Length: 460
Image 1 (cartoon, helix red, strand yellow):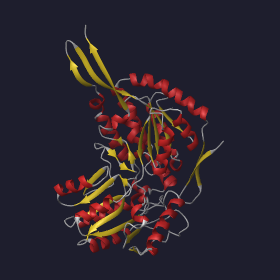
Image 2 (cartoon, helix red, strand yellow):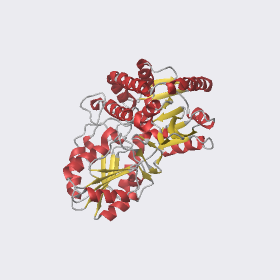
Image 3 (cartoon, one colour):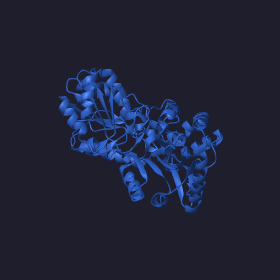
Image 4 (tube, helix red, strand yellow):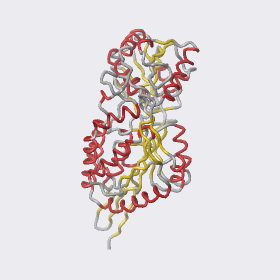
């Protein structure tokens, strides 16, 4: 029997191992889920909402243990307290708008006709979640799917495999009917088989572009909807009229938090030439104040990357950039924990960069950011759009009208003004180009997990 193994980035030891479930075992679970969903969808909306909220409350009760587990599994420092705040915020919002957004659209209600469009649950929703924000990314689909009357099956990334167990326990302890939420441990090969055999009615995947292609190819011809949030190379533009201190503080945090392992983290920054030197100096001071170390220690502000392989990929990007003429801003000798041989990676800021370098065009997903000087809005927009990805973009200016105009020219899913690296649950989370397709959160998030069904009744 094959196993899923999570190697801790703290010390390279095996933190947890789990047996991969057999195809028959998973198929039995899916059959039970479909049976349970028939009763679940008949349950009142308010009861479904109450149980979902109760499960999130149970998850909050486990938070101290979860935070420590996350440090062991993927390296995020315990000082940041985990993800439960965002999980609660998104749950509360999606539950608060459920009644309005799941209600039928009435076309006519007269003596002669009843005509309306209902929004019906799809049936079985499959969530394939990533390791970088294992609770926040999963909750985006889990909550609206359950509230809308679907059963949910979760497959979590091997690096954060215990997150699936925590979700399952929370829903069980909250009293969710058996079979409505199912956590599975599946191999990539078996997952592809399940997708090809149309085992699910909707699939949401968050992960790499390559992983997204595999998911889409496996589901091809089944006519099952697939939501994909994939790679990113999110840019920021600091205009001449920006609040410089706020821009530096926010953007550098957006680039470095979680060791740069954020879906919408800032990976490239374009700064007006009048602010460039001051921006770099302030950014250098912030980054050189970080403490790279064991994520279990309270003074650590930057933990290891989730896997030594990821750290080595960033090291190679930095090495190639420096060899091509880029300049390092950071005194890396400060970060003695970075030995160059494990998952602990010193943060880096690079200047003298351009789009001939991979560090400015290919996803890094680590604690490195390239910063370029620009002389106009047009130049900044051209550079921001020079990417195969499109998740978010951040504009720093005091002029809202200018931000709106520039934002309309950027090919991306979300435009921020004077902030970054945040998911507003009232706004649609979506992307374009190789970042993928589909949508979660906001009222549009319910569209992914329901289908329209028309009713046309002619009265006697």
